[in-house]
Length: 116
Image (tube, rainbow, N blue to C red; front, side):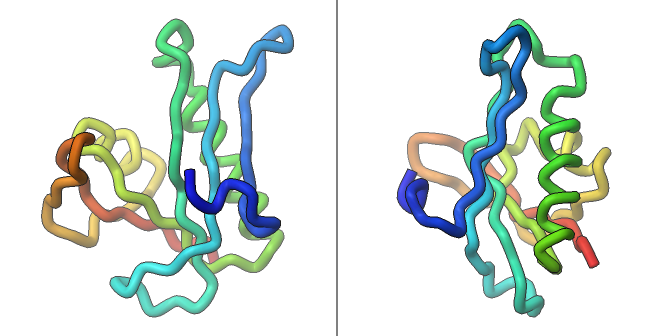
């Protein structure tokens, strides 16, 4: 993704027996929908199909939140796929937009979580 190579970008993975089973990336980026000055965008989250439903995604996000809090980040936000909204709500993300379409990907909602 654009921005992958930036020093401010964080890539986090979940591994089982040296095999990557889940990933997410955190990009230093702001959404105008939130006034907080320190924001990171969560993008590219995925868990291998054989390991879905095992809290891997939740653990990746909770670890990421702790790392962002150490950096005094105020907010993490994401464009959540429609089918993932319930997942994010369970870990205290809030919806702050109407549904919108990302071309070739599908319906999404802007969601965020306060960290401080």
